[in-house]
Image (cartoon, rainbow, N blue to C red; front, side, top):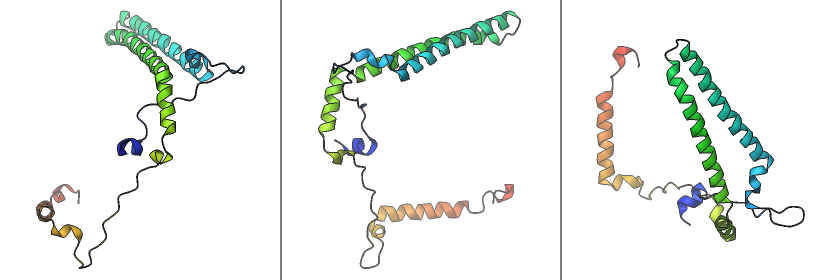
Length: 167
């Protein structure tokens, strides 16, 4: 596994082991849709969908009453409702795929990897000073030229901004 994956975590979601009911039988794949957490999200999605449609209807009645700006909102709120429904459907599909047999096999394989893969990368260490007293970066001519360029820019901007009270 690459260092990026180890440092930032897995890119694929981990799935829990196959849930079982009280009799020891495996639950169906769609069972997550009727858990209390998901039922709450379903309720929120339905209320939000109907709420946005209601707001569109409200804006329509305001537009009929003479508020010209409400005509734009009359069409925007139903579009928001459709976008929310599409997003909700995609969320369910993504979760369905994450709980599929292929994802379960990948999760089992990930669990079989060593614990060292889950450790964070060590912080980079500063190079030790040289024995002769010189800094390690002083030997690099490109770095010295760049530092001289930055010093020159700093000298050029000294005093700028004083006339408007920033310094």
